[in-house]
Each structure stands twice: as structure tokens, then as C-alpha cells.
Length: 378
Ligand SMILES: Nc1ncnc2c1ncn2[C@@H]1O[C@H](COP(=O)(O)OP(=O)(O)OP(=O)(O)O)[C@@H](O)[C@H]1O
Ligand SMILES: [Mg+2]
Image (cartoon, rainbow, N blue to C red; front, top):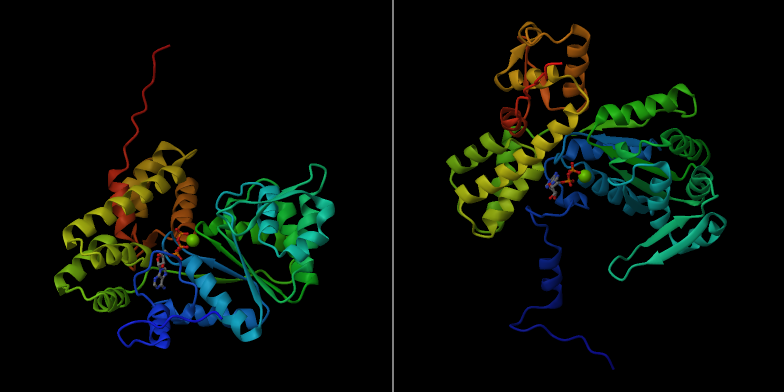
């Protein structure tokens, strides 16, 4: 007979389970349940209420704001109450609607895949990954496969993470989703994206076609207010029994800002007993490097004046001051729109000064190299 081993030193299994279930304040993985999501109760309620109203939802916000965590936690809370399933699809590397469809299919239960066999050339399982990898038949239309798959999903929440990467064939991708929205009442979709503008454009395009009943409800994740960030750090350090000073907390928020992801990384390092200075420096460098890459990516294909504008934003600048770079008015207007409403990294204050909303992007912009345009004599 199989027996359950007793744990030593008088601790019971129940206690052990409790310890395992205890939620860590600092945790490198996305949060998956509402108990481990810190300081987002308003956004979480909005998400759960939207799902109850059968709305689809778009979770938007800058990098490291906790979009994936909110989507998971909200979906799992709703699913537990309503007996739904949750399917998570990471679309970060899916650039075409065909790749996105294959990724979605690879997450579906075998019973649904069997019913879709006319579209599928190959299903393979890798040893390390629990999910399958699906290849569509060459002559199969991805849109039809996706439509049939989405139709077959009952009582399910589908999380499409980082949906903005799907560019090629995006109209067909959205049409399949729109059909599902109209025809399958028990399928709910949560989209997440770091480039809100791109995500919104996706929906506007579909909305104009009047394929959608309604566009998804938007939930914008902003950086935390400072007091929430300080509370998060304090609670985390209490949990892992590390003494920190008020000055260290202040300095951390001052340099890293209040996006949960960076504070979480700093907290993790300190809980591993790395010093304040080293933890802060390491996370700061990583964050600034990532922000720098993002800014470079954003500037690709834009005029060199756009780079100058971004450099001026480091110290804060009014519209008039930014115009002095020589950038045309309409280009400046589009640029500021993108920075404020798509990437959420720039804000305009009450006296009309545009500036970075987050210190990490401010430092990254400071490091952004100025391009010297050289003209070769003909
Ligand atoms: N509300 C929160 N409470 C506690 N930790 C959080 C919260 N939100 C995010 N985190 C932590 O921050 C990190 C980044 O979170 P997450 O991956 O959800 O963010 P994201 O916005 O999806 O990031 P990315 O832009 O890289 O996709 C994770 O380690 C996660 O555990
Ligand atoms: Mg994410």
C-alpha cells in the first residue's frame, strides 16, 4: 500500500501546504491569482466585471506594468467562480496571422485539435514543453482554422498576450476573432499589449467594418503611486526578513520609478541578501538598457528630429521649446501622441511641460546617442 510520508519535527502536511501556498511578495514569474497581485484591486475588479458582462478586454500599459499578471489573475478568478477554462497564448514572437493561429491551436485541448485535423499537418510534443506545437497544412486557410477553433471553445477565457506583434494578415486574424465574438457567447478574450496605439488601431479597423458588436473594454495599467510602491517593498522585505531603511526605499523609487516589474526584481535581489547598492545598480542598468532598446526601436524610420525631441524631453520641455528643434508641427503632434497615448512614457503637466513619466525612460533618453548626419560631397 502506498503511504504518505510524515514530515519531521512535528510539522503536519497541512502546515507544509500552507507554506507552499503562501504568496511571495517578490516573485519573478507573472502573478496568476488575485491573492498574489499587489495594489491592483481596482483594475482587477474592472476586469472581472467586464468578463461577467461578457465583454472582451484589452489590458494596456508600459513594459513591466504587470499586464500579463493582471490578465492571468483576473481570468483565473473569473474562471474559478464561473467554472471556465483559461488558455494563455504568448504572441510575442508571432508576426503573421498564420503563426498566431498555430500558437493558439498549440494550446488547445486534444479533443478540439482532433476535430480540426483537416487543417493540421503536424502536431508535435517536445519533451520539455507540456503543450503541443502545431503546423497548419500548407493549403489550409489560417482564418478558417482559427474560426473553427474559436467556435469550438466553450466556457473559455483566451488570453492573447502581446497581440500587437501580429502584423501580417492581421485583418483576417481580427475577422476570425470578430466572428467568434458574434457567434460564440461563452468565449471571452483578454488581449494585452505594450503598444496601445497599435492594439487600438487593430480594434478600430475591425470596429469600422462593423464586425464587432463592441470594441473591447480598455484597462490601462499605470505605474503605481509612490505610496503603493513603498508599501510593496516594505511588505516584501518584511516577508523575507531583510532590514531596509526608509532612505533605501526612497532612493529605489526615485531611481527605478514605480513600475511593479523593476521594483520586484530589486526586491528579489535584496531578499537573496545582495546589498542595496548592488541590487539597485544591477536592476537600474538592466531597466535602462531595455528602455533604450525600446526607444531605438520606436525611433526606427522616424526623422532625426524625433530623436532630438526625445532628448529635450529629458529635462521637460514645452511645445514651443520642442518646435525649436525644427520638427514640423504635424510630425511633432504625432510624435507626442505616440509617446503619451501609445507608449505611456511621456506626460504633459498642468503648465504644459512634456516630460517622461518614468525615471527609467528619462535616463534611457539621456543615454540615447545623437546621430550625426554626415553628407558626402558629390
Ligand atoms: N500587481 C503586482 N503585484 C506584484 N508583482 C507584480 C504585479 N504586477 C507585476 N508584478 C511582477 O512584475 C513582473 C512583471 O510582471 P508582468 O510580466 O505581469 O508585466 P508585463 O506588463 O506583462 O511585462 P512585459 O511588458 O515584460 O510583458 C513579474 O515578476 C510580476 O510577478
Ligand atoms: Mg507581459
